[in-house]
Length: 129
Image (cartoon, rainbow, N blue to C red; front, side, top):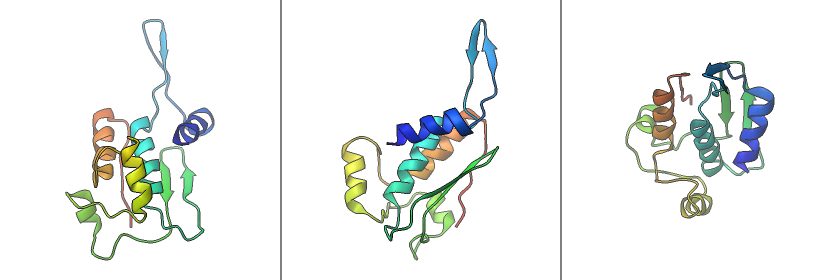
């Protein structure tokens, strides 16, 4: 599922700067694939299932994903970016993703996205309420 979304994004929307290593043509994504995959999984696990779809908008320099709803009342963006307990909106989906290996740990998705960006040094991340 997410692999197909990523393939469509790579083939139609994400512009990769081309460079060469010897004779090998290299086209790294501006948005690291691991961060994109984790963002998609986070969107699914934390989706408010009210009939409104996950929204995605692709810009030249970023991708914006959003769901209806807000952070849990007890959580701020600062808390989200720090160590926190996972609060998935749909526990069954979260547990299924965890058991199948799509997510590796609870409450670490945002940390993983930031880590991948930091390691790639290609773009900046942002979380907005």
